[in-house]
Image (cartoon, rainbow, N blue to C red):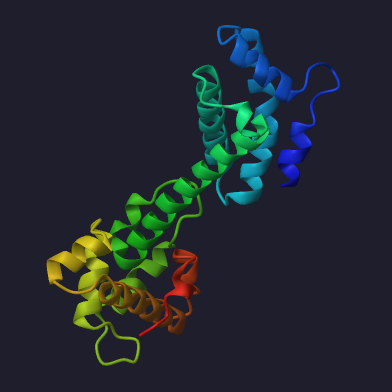
Length: 221
């Protein structure tokens, strides 16, 4: 990745980042080395998170701080092993990718909750693209309760959406209802699609594939 290569080439003013990492491994109590590594990582990591995470600047700073802290902790404890062939900068960005994955997982979970349970949308109170405007909440409630329309939810779909909004995962619902996970998953996705179609009919643009980026891979049934 371009961001990784650019950072890993070193600094004209002194030792390369890789040389600093090796020195930190040899002298884990040399705070000056760790401070310099910290200084060099902040800018590139913030740029990477701005590019690959659609979030507020506060979230970007938080993810950057968590990544640098984890990287330095592992470096101090010997968790980075250069004999495996990976440069330290590659090691750092692998941590960043895990941070991004975990953040997206939590973010999408909260989006799902606010879609399937409009009353829970008040809990989505950060600055990272609030899901619904005030005028949309009433329309969502109407869509959840709609009967007789092509996009009306079945009782089964409504039950799964409600359970998901309360934190139940598909596996626990499968066990509770004694049904295959694939059946629960299908009801969940069908319910989300219907909600989005209903909202579209009311003039709101909400895409179910934005709520769950993997949903396109699960259209069977």
